[in-house]
Amino acid sequence: MKDFRVGVIGATGMVGQRFISLLEHHPWFHLAVVAASARSAGKTYEEAVGGRWAMPSPMPEAAKHMVVLDAAHVEEIARQVDFVFCAVNMKKDEIKALEEAYAKAECPVISNNSAHRFTPDVPMVVPEINAGHIRIIEAQRRRLGTKRGFIAVKSNCSLQSYVPALHPLKEEFGLTKALVCTYQAISGAGKTFDTWPDMVDNCIPYIGGEEEKSEQEPLKLWGSIEGGAIVPAASPAITAQCLRIPVSDGHMAAVFMSFEKKPTKEEILARWASFEGEAQRLALPSAPKQFLHYFEESDRPQTKLDRNLENGMAVSIGRLREDTQYDYKFVCLSHNTLRGAAGGGVLLAELLAANGYFD
Image (tube, rainbow, N blue to C red; front, side, top):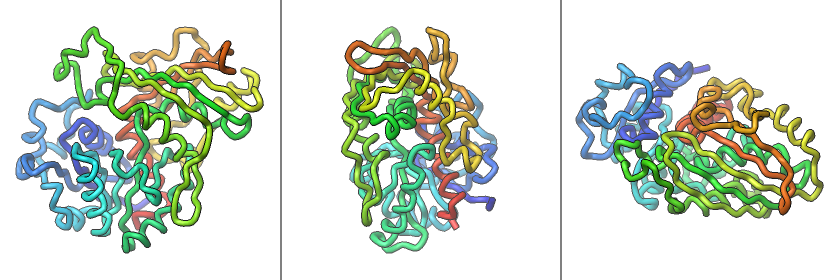
C-alpha cells in the first residue's frame, strides 16, 4: 500500500488529538500537517494544545514540534497532503463551506463533523455496514467539478454501538422497529472531568441533536444509491432518548427490537458471531478481527472493562432476552472517540485507500 501524507484539520480538539494519536504508528498514513483556528496558527502543536492534551497516551514526539497551520489556508494545506481528516468546532454552514473548499482544491476530506451527513451525494459510511456507498463519490465529484477531491463522513458516535448489532438481523428477519436509550460519555462533548466538574455524580437527560441523529442517520446508512444520491431507507422506525452520564469514554445503549419474522435467540447469537463486513474481508489495519462480541455474563458489557476491546474498534453486546412489548432487548457498548469518532474516520480512510480513492 502506498504511503499517504495526511493532515488533521481541527487538530487541537479532543477528536483531533485522537486522530494525532492514531496516526503515530499507522502503517499507511503519516502525519504531514496539523491545522486549527487562526489563534493557534504559528504555534507548535505542543504550545497550541497546552495543558489540554486529553489522550491516555503521551503526545507523539513527531507532532509536538510541528507548526500549526491556519485551517482557512486551504490551498497551502492541500498542496502538502494526500487527504485530510476534519474535526473542527464551527457552525454547520462554516463547516460545509470549509470542507467543500478542501474538496474543490482536490484534497479529499474524511470528516468527523455532522454538517455533510445528509448531503445526498456525500457517503456516510460504517465500513462493516455500507462500504458500497463510497461509489457515490463519482457523482459528488461531477457536482463539485473535481478529479480527486471529495467529502466522505462517518456517522454519529451515538449509533455506533446499536446499529452494528441490528444490521446483521435487519434484512433476514425484517426489522420493523427499534427503541434505543443511549448513555453517553462526557468525551462525546469534548470534555473531561477536569473541564466539566458539574458532570461528576450527575446525569443530564438531554444532548442537543443526538436523538434526531440517532433516529435518522441509520436510515441513510441502510439507504440505497439511486441516480446521483443516497436515498435513505424507509424503515425500520427508530425512536431514541440520549442521556449524558458520568463516564469518561464509552457510549452504552439499551435496545428493544421487533421483527416481521421473529428469530430465535440462537439465530440472533449466530448472526452476531459470524458477522463480518468489508473492513474484515479487506483486513484493513484498524479493523477489529471480530466486529461484534457477545458476553454471556449478565453484568456485561461494562464500560470500564469492555470499551477498549480490539483497540476500541469492536462492539460489545450482552443481555439478549425476550421482551413483553418488543420481540427482544439487549445492551451494547462502543468506544465513542475510537470506533465512534477518530478510529471510525481512520477506518473509513483505509477503506477509501484500499479502493483507490486517494490515488
